[in-house]
Image (cartoon, rainbow, N blue to C red; front, side):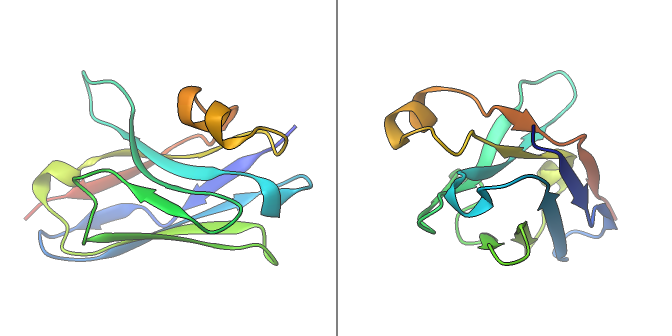
Length: 125
């Protein structure tokens, strides 16, 4: 079992920055695909950014150029640096992970196996 714990959310003004972090328990962190999702009330949870064990990253169009996902395998942590935040970035952000044994084709076609509890990010003036 993997436990994911998010930190770093809060209130920020438009144009500001926030840094989210996710700490994972369990073994094989370096082999796991990890991701950030977000959910706006009334909408489905959506992928924001994903990082594979290799370090390869993928971003939603809304995040490209503004957000950066990274990982520190030595510390079992993943971060999401969010810059130039907009009102529409307001959401609950979730850390997510896939089982370490899953291959890329499965990761691309299935939802994550593990989820954090979510953390609120509010962009407001």
